Length: 253
Image (cartoon, rainbow, N blue to C red; front, side):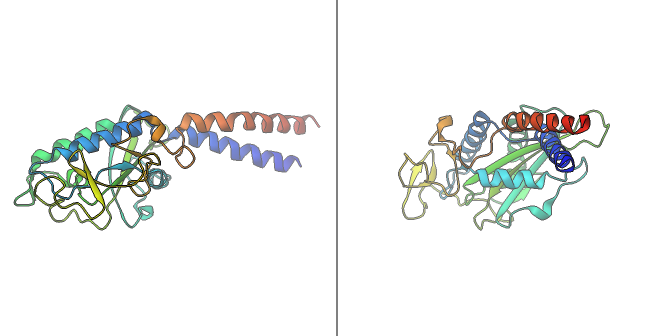
């Protein structure tokens, strides 16, 4: 019996440690991420005729966490990148608020991109990823990827975008009047195309929980969307305490 208690104690300790180093956006941060990308995509120059409206995906968020599982300050597990996803990541030396910092950094690379020539004068691939017309979902995560004992801490922030068959090798979107080439059954919102369905269920974008049309935190699908890491710790801690008490009784016996 005591061996079982010891094993459970180790498992819960590892879960608590994971919750301290792995982090997903809060509901407010998820909304900010979607809003940032929506603003960027509606203001592209030249204007886009086929840009899809962006939403937040809990599935991509979970995939981002998986990619960070074995991260270090010099590498990332790209083998676990979903087949229909693109990623952009950046190391920072503070915990947050870092998601918008990463987005802002790569959005500024727009000045390095010439749409007509489809050329980058400097780094701009991540900007092209952010304005890929076929993409309609994003999910982000971050983790402490420092080596043991390293200082300062190194945090890796990563976002995944569902590319839906798009290719950043060419021009990321079609030039033209906004929404003039939306797919059948789509409407126009903020110069971007979204599928017309019931707004009450917020399902106008595949596999998304938050969209730019629903800015309220209530738009998060709490049943499917991972809670921030602090919530994970709150759920683990009481059970961990009970297991540690049981372990203590084993020692007394």
